[in-house]
Length: 246
Image 1: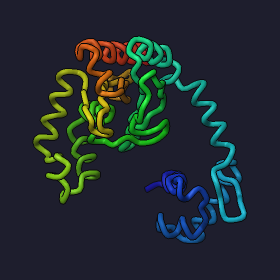
Image 2 (image 1 turned 90 degrees about the horizontal axis):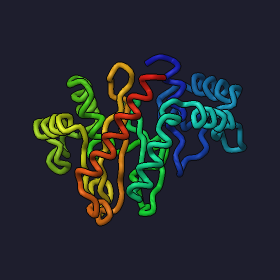
Image 3 (image 1 turned 135 degrees about the vertical axis):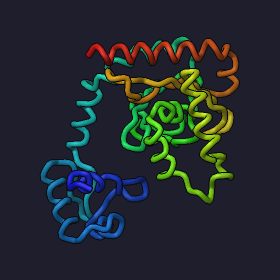
């Protein structure tokens, strides 16, 4: 693992029950030496990514600056806002744009509809890889070796039957998603919530992320399923075309 990746893993330590970190936490949870932990805290603090508090270090103002830059200049966000707005106007459902990064699918844009409810994860949070249309439609377009790597890394063999994630049925389901060009989920992340997602690609036709419509199953079912599928696949295709022209 390179030094930059080791440095950035410090940010993974922040969570609701742990908003402040220190050297002991870094050493305990990441296995770094005290010297390394002190050095990383100093470097991140000097750059404004962390700020010193009496009990340790919290996230710093430089992160807010980066959030501003991404919100205003990220092509994926800039090219998708009106598409997401139109999906919400047409359906009243929530519309999401999510991006594939590492082994995670992360929501980068959320527009809540009139039927607002839990969407699985807020902006910037990773989504369940295997029980969400948003994530599964991304997995379906990865290379076979990538799918196997993600599967082996994130599926506990002792929970296969409980989770319904035996390899052969799982890979078969991804092939079916890829063939139809979208994925539908019903009550997987939250009871009574349904969604449909379509893939987004970069200029080299590598899967970049997904676009999703999600809402209460009653409202979702009020539309013809084909209509919702056409809406989200059409918006995802338009976003792919826009990104290619950037």
